[in-house]
Image (cartoon, rainbow over all chains, first blue to last red; front, side, top):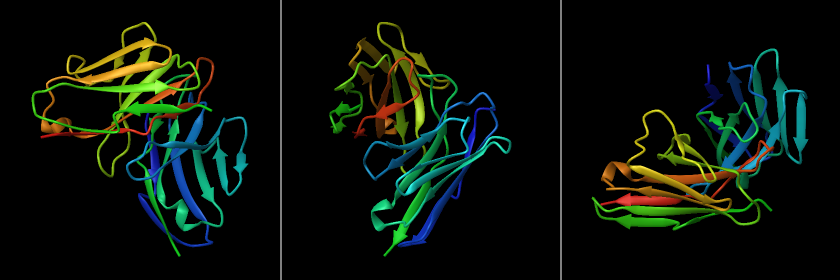
Length: 112
Length: 115
């Protein structure tokens, strides 16, 4: 099964709060899990990525939590800011240079 | 580093005409380039994968004769939408990756409107 299921579809968070977006997958051959941030009318930008041999990766206010046994991974945005308002996509791939399987996307709105 | 550009950023054309979109990796050599289309409020849909010097691999349901992809060099791939129709209006995005690496770097996208 090649799908990556992402939730929620939309999320509203107050400034300073924590935004949490979840993804689940079936294919245990996936070995690379990136998160992309996309602003309206722009291409996606790589935010942070994780390999399945680690359970957590943190870069600034962004953290990926990875649960290999549950086949789930999530993005946590700490101290959310209005500038974080964008659409976030999780993805997964099998091989280096291989195609990415994208989740459905989450539209995040951070209210001031 | 890892900058991908697209040209044009937007294009309006008449139904029946062909449109070419360029994708360039500016500061690295891209062994593989990908082409996506995205409709409003939807996820990215992979159209095809191309490797330098070889024919593109198209995803199921994508018409290869309508969406012509050429990957002539390690820094340039082109997508030509032939005989465009209004239903081809969409946001087209390319990405590029380097051999031996997982990361894909995306271009800024091209908004195509077919009248």
